[in-house]
Amino acid sequence: MTLDRYLLKQFVPIFTVASFLFVMLVSLMDLFANLWRYINYEVPMGQMLTVSLYYLPKSFSYALPVSLLFASAYTLGDLYGRNELTAIFSSGIPFSRFSRSLLVLGVLASLFSFYFEDRIVIPTLKTKNETARVLLHQQQETNTSNLVIRAKNGQQVYAVDYYDYANSSLNGLSIIEKDESGALVSIVRANHAAWNGEYWELSNAVMYQWDNGILRANQQPESDEYRENPEIFERSAVNVTEVSAREALILVNDLKAAGLPFTTALSDYYHRFSFASASFIVMILSISMGGRFRKNILLMTLLSSLLVAVLFYIMDMITMMMAKLGYIPPVAGAWFPVLFFIVAGVFLLQSAKT
Image (cartoon, rainbow, N blue to C red):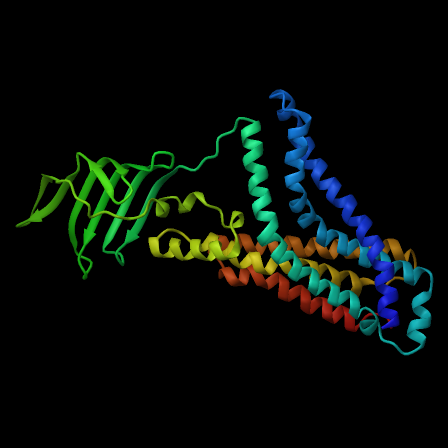
């Protein structure tokens, strides 16, 4: 316990300073990236700072894994450089035991990262984006086009050319009716349909039906049959990364039920959980790289830890891209890099100098 407290006492100040510096760096990068737009629209300094303030939680989310990596690699490298670990190893304490407190801290940081992202980062980032759009006179694109949605267990299919979010209206609507065997019953076409709060009101709708082998067209009378909620047509405009984990799961299930492509959404949903473990992964990688060099220990530990962490992010990006394209299952795309680097980190940690 004494060694654990000593190690954390060395680690915490470095982590605090690193977190502050990386958060400021990320925030300033976002500010300067949009500075010319703020100047162009003569946005007051106070409102610019308000937008930056809303971005701080996201900045900390970005900075947390990097700060943990830097602090752990620097702390252990500094202890190696001052030969303090020589006395510890001479007492028979293995390196895996000595670094246990940092590993536990990495697990806690991963759990914190998930809940922090889910409860704080997503709402504040949404507020930041909405505020910035207002200040910069930008419009949010929520309309969707070329939708195909299934209803009533696939017996009813909506094909929509364009969904107008602001007016809750459908343009270029075709409704295909099937029986339980999948045979075509009718096709209803309307140039426009408006939601009245309870059902869709079709304008100049025409129904096509088979009559003794002849396809006949008749004017569709006004009906309250079509009651699919407008929210189902908005799903493709919603990004899983912009909603909480609970809402993301609801979105994925809605996409499945509507017959819309859901692989990307499902991959992002799994990635929400797997990527939270990045804090633990960078910790175990940076710890396991410590003590593997005889010269320039501090510098080489930092560089090697950073290199291995970059490899993790690259593999994560590649597997997620393959999952979204359908080459591998979504769960594999999200979790394979995590499991691979955890196993590699444990192996490196067990074989570290002791």
